[in-house]
Length: 417
Image (cartoon, rainbow, N blue to C red):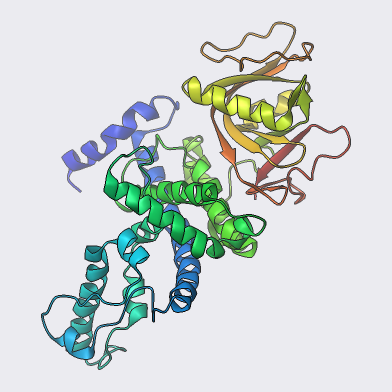
């Protein structure tokens, strides 16, 4: 490879390499390449699960409303052999509104191109056949499935965007909520659609970046695992657990190697990262007149309004011997209805709480002033709680959070599933 091209590729990694003694920019470049490969596999599981779940419900919905298929009528065989414009017909108006006539036309044009490839190759397993709706379905990209959940520019006043948003709300209420039964089994509301839309949008954007080999050092790569598990769990808890067994643990390990790049070379031999004590979890019951849910919400809002930084005190600190092994903190209310995870910047214990500059507590009074343990936390974000379980986390012995807290126990070490 040309030396100039090599140096150009390494340039974005040099600044980050200076933060890790003994680590070269090439090490971080290799990590980026390794993570991209792992992430593509993980994201493909999410994309396949989402599209199959949505397609199933859209077929049933279309037939219940008098349509043969939500993708419209499949063109006649002679169309695939000719050059005419794609004949869009008998597609539900909501689908045309959300996908757009041009996008739906492209699906069939793609099918016409592959048909001609089939015809030129007599050994092709589909030689002599014409494309059908399953072929068109397979050409709809992840972004297309996201469009069916609606636009992400929520503040737009554009009439076209507002019309698409209204169509998405209607399609969710009539059909798509059924594709995510673990999320909607007890109630159905539009906030669920928005949550899924945003998670899928972020996962899709990550997929675009890693598939093009972009530098993702600045991204919270481990955060995305929680989002993927949340989307999969909304479809089927079994799928979420199965995917975690297949690729999730590898994804977690490789994502964490960003913080331990000096261990990259030993990755092939073993998992060099601690699994049982990467995360310290705290059960929050109350603080003065505030419930555990309200405390977590206050910390989330404080983090959002202070550049991703917040500060909190707790009654029990982690063991000193684990200081170098902890990277994240998990906050969960006693009922398991709300939880949040953040990066540990620093923590300590003592009479004088010297918090790092820029890390301030939320503006509410605490009744328990004797708490001496403290955490400076960065990039706190909410994680999904379904059925009282925190998706993506468990103790070393397999207990789910918050079920691992018993009696007066308020602190446990947990790990990613």
